[in-house]
Figure (cartoon, rainbow, N blue to C red):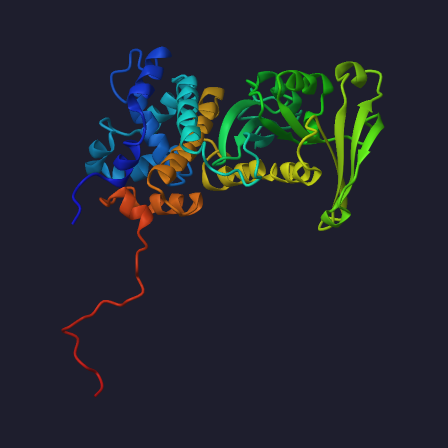
Length: 388
């Protein structure tokens, strides 16, 4: 029988705690704290995320039920709902944001040689945002509409491993296109976006930075065709053209030529028009690039369904951002473990297994990689025969 560490402790061993403590020191997270330090707060919140706790009271009850094991989990202080709520409201959320970004960098290094599914050697990013609705009375700082509050999760997803390379949390009123100003651009990379990001001045900045973009155009975009190329209409392509913008403002914002690809989606009976500054890839690959944008939608769907970022344990801005960044770090931690232990199971399956076994003493690699067989019934040798 394995008598080593708890599954939860083995998970925490995959985290770079020296880096975590460096961020705590940077933001004075443990200033005047005598007990329940930032590391213990983080462990409690990770436990709440992994086990889908509905509230801080729920988290407190579950952890107190395992009181003899808390020390082995790295939680040396008594877990109190009020103490945890105060820590979430006061401890600087940037500690967990910087730590999540550090984990993201480690995860992207692990997945850098993976195939992005598009036969393109360059990095492909999908950019989008997701709105999390909030109650106006409880979250008045998250401005959105007259009768509702909200926060937006702006995410740039790397299609290698589906790791979020960039995340920005804003109130609901920030328009998506403004996030382009915050990106650190990577020359040679592809940025795939929806038409909400159609701003030719910002797109020209991407173009001048030697980046490629693919996005849908709007109906009122004014342009003229300067060249056409043959397409295979059996693939759904309608046309592949070189265009020049003719709008009074757009032609000044983007003075160079663009490529326009029109594609007919037979499943949805819809014609999609894409614009890009890449003239080298086949037209069908441009359409496939835009189709890959749905991976960022799946990312939002996954974390909303399996992690706690829709219902919050606190109402302050600091508590909300801390919870979201800790949830992101849990997602990235699962990705790191999946790669390090060479686990073939999906993120969903890994999370479900962990949620039920955190207090078990099973080697993590065995737990996640071994197929457990429950098909055979136990043999009871002392059972008497009822019938001959």
